[in-house]
Image 1 (cartoon, rainbow, N blue to C red):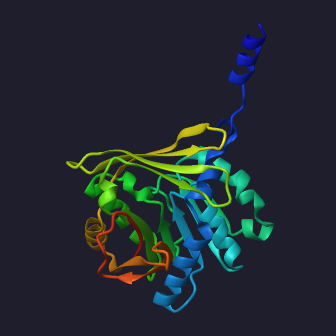
Image 2 (image 1 turned 90 degrees about the vertical axis):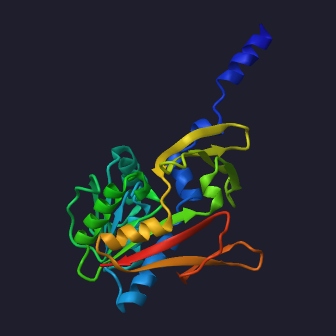
Image 3 (image 1 turned 60 degrees about the vertical axis):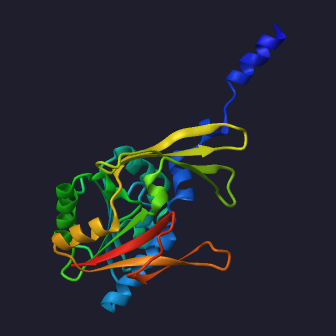
Length: 278
């Protein structure tokens, strides 16, 4: 009887995975909003010789970047757009809810399709974390780029990121310890179809007690290459399309310093930024 009781207790144990908040884990392991904002803010100033005021974040998720933007300067306004009501609700409670009243007045959140949303014309539109890869056909992605260009101010700039390298075409699992946190980030590329470029990926999280939060996030994307992205941006009417590549530190690790580049090494894996001017 005693052993049965112990077994029942173990079964009902609340693991670290069961207590985990997937959106918080994502922000801690994937999205560094301050760095992202610093890049688009400084790059816009370099290209336009003035500071941007209005930023629209497409596929904004928890609106972490929007919050960082309105905190940056008292003149900044942010517009967040996402079709997922659940993630927007989390962002309102956990991120937007921490803003001051003055900051709240400068942030607008829209539950809408990025292909249909209407907003005030921003200086910057940002589509990060490869979110636009959900558009799998050329005509779909080109249509989105056209919508972005039309929405921007006359001298507006579109920013996005991309990743690639020969490992991006493989079915692999990579683990990364998150400094200062008690969990492991696990990136899985479950499948890649070389005929149509379809890529299925998952984010899992592992914890010290041995529990796992499997498929906390799943993505059904097309793996777009940089030449394809640049060509479609040009076809959509953008000009001065620039790729920003990061360098390496003394330990051979990416240094997070992204600079304009026209030539890069054929690495196993890389992440870059892209800017496209209206």
